[in-house]
Length: 479
Image 1: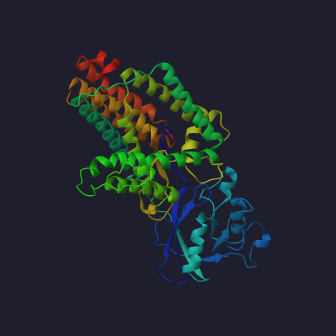
Image 2: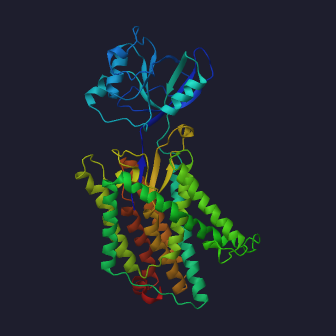
């Protein structure tokens, strides 16, 4: 659930600062917009321009302009008090060759009037306030800058990476579910599941709608609830995924001494305690540094993948009929909130995309953590706040329930994992289709629209071929 989208805060470029006349400098990330600027040169080997540091001013009126103007120089000013257009208009009228605006907020260009865009003939770029402090530290009063924009595709390996992560999670969770089913049957344990009625499924879909609408209207408050929930439940999934590996390590098998600590009264193995501390530490570190786009996304993806795999092992769908009803209902939910809601929102953006990436009107920089996120892995990603490719955990977990059901059904009919492999192939094809449509349409897509039909349609022919369609559809008490 959520949606598959490319979260773009603008086109990123590079500002190479150096002391006036010096050859060596330092690169900083800038946010540029073709609507506001002429395209900067493509390579750093271009002539540099002297900088006029006016960062003590916001450049909103003629009184802020120096007496001699900015003739032949790039002006540096602070954001605020007036529109970007007013700032760049003043700079251009007073001879500036470009304008750099430092801002404390995210490097996002606002909407503006098209006719105003066409009037601007000098480059305009945004830099972070943290970079301003760094520039003041490293360079003297007289400095120069070269602006350029590497000619790179929007998406390099990020699509491949998120594909591997998503499919790997589905394969891992589905395989784990089948192995657990096989072990239970070998041990003679009865595998009970309750049939999911249409009423229960309708309630699940309705609850998803309610939560999403609450998030949309009360995002600044609800987002913290989801962050806390993610921090509490994700380390459980990580622990459950790592324990089967750790338990095979013949180290730390001694039990903790007798104690009165509530969670240690049962005297668990030392390795269990250490693993629990490790998993909790990963969650805490992510919680503290979650907004550091340079590396926090790695921890978020690890926690999210582990939690999804654990849930796929834990939850047991009773039949293909239940899977179809659940996935069909949530497919409709996904499509409605991505394709239909833009007609009802003031911004014209879908509710799903707004919630997944954070509403533009939100006063907080927080993002919902229930997504896999991978940055655009290109040159500027080394030091920029990258645009992210987002895939909701629901788009892994929900089709993954069908994949897990298929592997358990393989165990039931003693098939050589044919249902499992067919469903994984279907999920992979559906994910590729969703990526293709994201890149072609340049907009968020309801991933379940592609994942659900493909996963179902790839597994059903196997049941027909093996003459097991009725058993596959009903499942019943066997699963």
